[in-house]
Image (cartoon, helix red, strand yellow):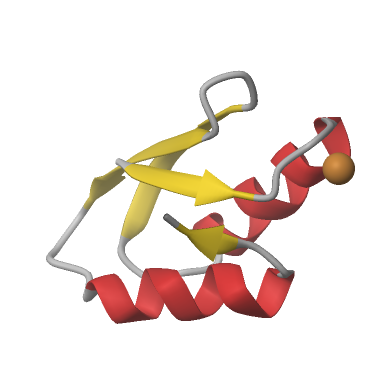
Length: 63
Ligand SMILES: [Cu+2]
């Protein structure tokens, strides 16, 4: 689970979801706009930095 800053609309949700789904090892990505949270399963351990980087590239910040 990650708290994400900067999501304001459905487009943001899709952008965050896409960014996380492109991180190798993450599955079952769900993004909650109201809570500003993303949840996901890790098929294998994924470094927090990789998740942070993928979201930064999409324009969002992990809180
Ligand atoms: Cu948006």
